[in-house]
Length: 404
Ligand code: AMP
Figure 1: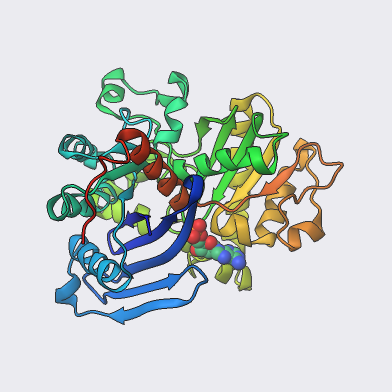
Figure 2: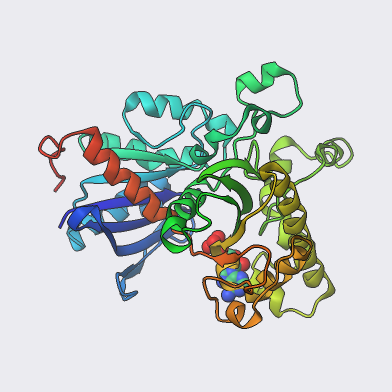
């Protein structure tokens, strides 16, 4: 079976999916798994196309001490026990900088250019690149493709791309990049099939997961995002604060004596819903809680979504549709209802019954604009890009010998 392997590597986990390549380039998910607890309590779990468990096993720390080791162990399992010998590997890479506006076939030169972007995403980029390097060493002929979270936003205008800081810093790369691009691209590519009447119009997509952002899309292209230089900006998230006056960072450093590393840790791990509620970063727990601070955290979350919707509608000069996606956006009828309340001034009205059953269209017929729920699939997007580059980048016959 021809397959594409998709890899999404973070600091403590490597997630992977295997897609079979079927007639006319259709991709079907066959295996979904992850190695988590890297360096602490390594555990490999994987399921098949029907959600049936294919693996659940623990490893000693020494066997899976870092991301390359995790990739090797997971790769061995895929090859030896699942008989997966992929045609190519697609990687999620958080940062493509100003240069990469689309997925790219990886070679040593590309890795060197992506390495230069590590200072722009120090918590993610090195981990994204680790499996790329280990595959380059161990399987040098296996085609690899990098798919970027930033690429979809490279269509932003110069004004959307700039901070009001001296130009030299912009030239060095201090720009408003925007993230979650693979999710937005997937939604943008899916809308022509499920809602053709709005697909080319002015849309706000709210990607509300453990990371959260919103994107203004016009004519299928991103024109503005709530995220900027890093994935810290914009909406409050599970553990990140979203928009924050830079003065708060100065205060933490000058008055609280926090080092840059401590501030970074604080901003990525201790803020957002978790910091506000003091309970959890998981929306399910907050919705189930009676605590005042859990309620406050939810109120801040939906309030900021409403504010940012106003900002993005200004960027679009109007609004023709609103789309919810990702973990919270797809699954929490309560949060969607609260957000739609904040959109009331647009003339948006919710169909409570359709919302409760997680229907695709959740606004009433009399709503000024339609509101949709569209499940995202970033991994499928990566697999599609990888297959497309494989087919366009080199002829089928000359494709790399498979690894056994
Ligand atoms: P994601 O990052 O897209 O996987 O989203 C993960 C987040 O979605 C979790 O942290 C939860 O807060 C949230 N989530 C998932 N299912 C639900 C649900 N049924 N209700 C509320 N929140 C949910």
